[in-house]
Length: 491
Image (cartoon, rainbow, N blue to C red; front, side, top):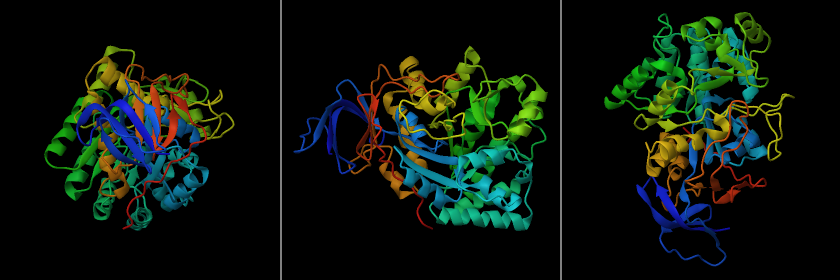
């Protein structure tokens, strides 16, 4: 059904517009924006007086891969949820699986550097499942440097995935931090040749590990400068810790020099990954000034008592999801660092959303509201609403126009060159995809906590994906599965 959103405060970062207007949606696209629009016969008119209307949020960094996860993100204002840091492999299966199950939100994937290396170095057969990827992360056999023949083999796999529609290359360098830097440079060269971005979880910083082959953030900057590739620095807050000012300075200098480097952040002091990850080993934690007690099993809430217990769980359940506390959000220093990272010029908001894990091993549940027992990091449900609360409502560090630029417009622009479909996202221009969020500016906030990460955000009054209502009057529409794939251009 065509829809007219009547009388809202329309914020379009593409046009730099912020004012009272109507938005007409027809055929899944924006048909008109302006004051006093007429509603053609058969059009549903929705009164959004007092609400903020803008392009739905584009999340470049989400690992949810499920209807349950997409629903939590929908209640947080997301209309496009992409897994670009890790990616999935094989890419054709990832897209086919999502299409078969249906998705509330638009979806897409990068080529998985980690699984390509695991296939060549381990003989592991990829199955496009995040559970397989998490279980593989802690296996040291794929974390070594490659021989010339191995390097050629897994680069070829990545090239094939790009040809099959991958949205670039996701590089989990932080999970194999001792690998030869020349390998990363080769990945950047491949990306530049193919015209696709890379999305990197960087290796350790030199302040943390003086023996690192190269500083993680500096590696991204050098590779971008030497190859001309577009390179995205994932979750700079969690990989930089208390060295964030130095890292942001490095990235700023690179951008001023013309390098194509983008950066993302999320508003939490703890990350989440598999407990077998290289950077959660006792020795790596000590390098960061952390200890076993900074690690918490997500499903049980158990905080690691000591190194013995941490090593035991890493051996027995390397794929078990956990939280890693980087800094204390309850302290002024931690909160200030979080806000400074978000405020960095042109920093993109990305959630690093994790799947909802169920005690019986499932990653999916189609009931709504989600039944008790599921666990996930609160960033899955609350990243964008928390960011709006912190940066717009509480501190006025951002205008609404700037908020939509960071959450919608800039992330979509990262994909413009490799995915023509992205050009119709992140703005409200005529002909753009009707991916729209309608917010109550006085109420929008997160409610998820580390103890209960599945609590949906509030304040998203309406959400449309390709013109289909996914959230109506603050209520999720459980029958709505309008999500469409966003694919890279065939090369």
